[in-house]
Length: 109
Image: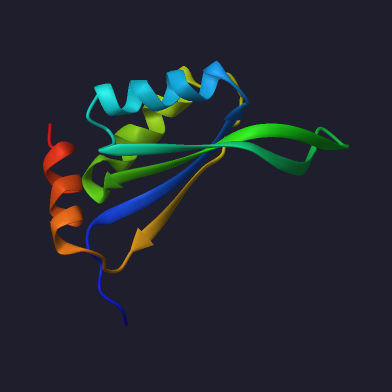
């Protein structure tokens, strides 16, 4: 069984362009994330309402604490334009201790 650093990396897809920046900025300003990387121009192929879709999106890579995860998800559901936004949280078992501590300190309420 691995360790749990209490840090989460959360993947969120957004419509390409300014929407991703607005979502990213809103979660950092609300202290729901310490940092968000925007990976532009990912290609997403998915099934939606019975059809296969092929779209360009931006991928947000969000660093947050486990304690703020539920609030982050709720916030994204409120500000995201998709009716079912992708929000997938991954456990970070370990990492640079200084960085992990920084994420924890920047996401305290």
